[in-house]
Image 1: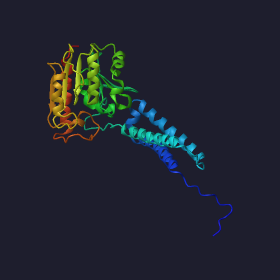
Image 2: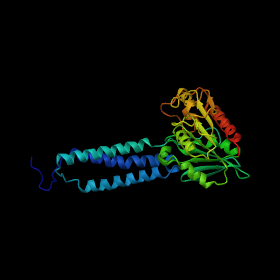
Image 3: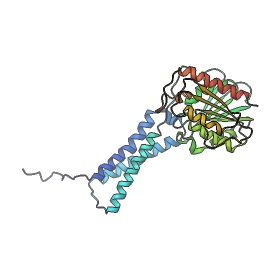
Image 4: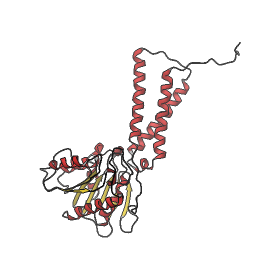
Length: 319
């Protein structure tokens, strides 16, 4: 059989070419999937959307370059080949990390969405959600660090009763939804509200760790509110700090045993409230969480207890 003189030669693509193509697809498609498929990405701190857009642009540019050099089969030394493979593995690891950062989005519960009722106003900024009480200026404030990879809006419903009780509530939008990347973020929120004389910092899970560290290093913090969380460092000698730890009996992540062990790290007069039947994900409205325990009580029942304990704690602090 004779081939046509005008036929193009068939070039076998090297394995590295297809590895590059896989990287291009991952860099482009994963960010688009997150940006278009999860509304929490664009509602959160701007760092994650910026990272995703940058990744997609790099993927498109790499794809154009790969297409233009598709007929080339450059020869590489062993060292360069190893380096090329290592770079592509690193790219795929970066994409896997970005996918892992895909946040748990707010899921509306039976309770009214924060700010929907008359009186409390909800202000959404790039780095925080602020619930402002109606009427006279508030003198007490709560700055709240969300749990790891959880959208800030997921805590608005459960903290709204505190705003109804006259407390200014600031829910931080943390970089990449990881509070440890900016543990001092609460300081900026405090500076934005000089009218507040009594400050409490709080957080859920990893957010509680950040809140604890901030309270330890800032003497102008009067209260610490822990949701299914505990500190890494001892606050036993932190004078003047009131602490409330609220946990769930069925929490599979911040287990009752871990919370109980944290008692030695907190002031002697710290208060502990265990919500019977509650689990880790009940401290916000973002759905189920991997590794969590099975609840034995309705979400709304548990959250009423959490909100009630929170309001009682905040209102007892001297304003």
